[in-house]
Length: 78
Image (cartoon, rainbow, N blue to C red; front, side, top):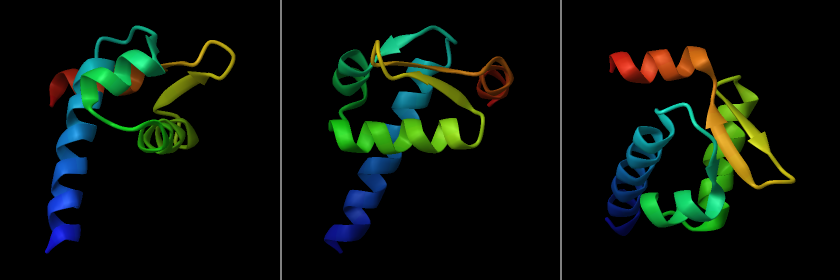
């Protein structure tokens, strides 16, 4: 039961993260952590997933992430 609740909450947090990233701008990890309520390892996991499939770009040096233009257009339609 607890695992189901955690998955549901994580889904809501990821949805909020995608809403923030949907503007197509660069966002610092610290900013995204606050806005989406994700801890750093969860945020990094989502960012790495998005990057692996070409949905986002991650600037490791600046610790910033942004979605690709194509994914931004997809998010705007949903």
